[in-house]
Length: 108
Image (cartoon, rainbow, N blue to C red):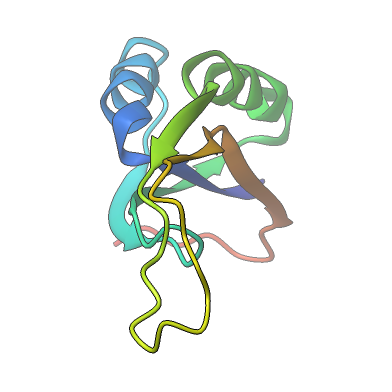
């Protein structure tokens, strides 16, 4: 058995939840916040049999796409850094995934 921890952007979380339901994959969904853009993320914790890990990873890959977005540049209050006010293009989305061995699984 494995524990998959998948961190996806909030925009992808509903599609991934639906894909898990259709594939009969049980997951715990947690609201989290990312450090880079301080944007909302969703963390899924999935306990899954070893033989289904590849299937779950494929579901995550299909529903968690990378895309480019534009953000407002940071404002320097002290004025030491000049900004043009031009939005910055950043790549967002995708998923960060950890696959861990499970030593013991209990269900009460």
